[in-house]
Length: 527
Image 1: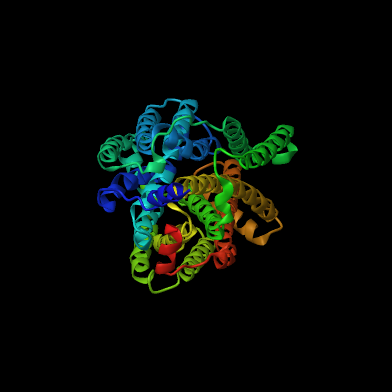
Image 2: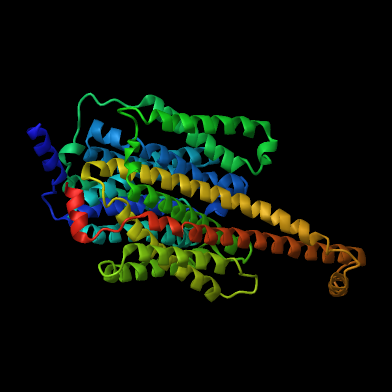
């Protein structure tokens, strides 16, 4: 018994032989690549849709298939780490991610692209939880705030600069290069991981490791059916389609059975970490923040390109102030973290995200770039203040040996949140646009004096260039086109407002999190 306790204590206090900041290099690079690829394709979707001859809705599968595949792979991280050794699994994941990125770049059909993105998601699924676990283990508890500030900055900045990089590459070269650029970074990350990473005793290769096959199957079935429902539900008129109803039953049942199956010993994930109040509350907040972030990054370039006529690069560039805001928040967080209650910083961050969402919700077609830049800066500032303290506080009371499992669960749920957020806002834009079109179309009648005056003026101007009948048709077509544009604008604005409201709604959950002084945090984790 004494030997067991001693062994456990040695496990908990294990530290790498190299400087923790050197150990952080390959993990930060890998996390950056993975998160960057969640959004780098956003601004290139119209170009990909044209290349593959598919609709805008179908092209979103390029985004969501990646998120779902990585979510499925994340749950098996702990098992693969025990089977192969965590360092070997990390290197394998980077190699698979890099090779599948090349496969994405050479894809010549939507089917091949989705297949390559699924492979890329499976490879990338292991990167984020392993990176987070390695960072938390390598640093002393009192230094974890700084490590998480760097890690949080990467997680926040990568999806923000993704559209900028993707837009520039798409406009100046072609969209396949947004995937080819992963090749040199992948090679560098493999070399750094092989040189710098070490496996602690509890993360080394183990014998007689069994996979929870039933749990993995149920998880795959649950997430796959969920994503099909979210992506295809709007086009199928949701529950008016019998196949959507049947798929929903399968989705709900498989999800329920998955969580039930995880209650047993040697399950795919250890759900006991949810007994920790900090972990549970922090995970919920992170899921919502991730959903808002990925949803807003997905629809903002679409709004700017389809409504405002921006190029891919320019639409991506307008998101850059988010990165500046996140960097500013990182600097301020480093100065304030030891002086101010971290929960207060998180509340301020969520309030700023909500403010930015509501500001986006009141844009119109008569705007300048500054009208996009200011809310984006506020959004980035809020993301920094909200995410960095929440990530650190959510694992403050967990033991080192729980980090890989806990990080995997958080990453899984955040991926699900991001996929749901991306799909839901796409549906909201479509439905809200239809609703506003229905509301406005009644104004296009000859009894409306404003409409009659505009039609008359347009016909008079066009009659100089075409026959009267054609001028009448062109005038009506032009005004109807403006109505459609306005209705789609309203759809986007409603979606932005809901994102803002969602950030404000989760603020009370922050009060469920306990903030620990540095000394108390240190002792509680090492026990």
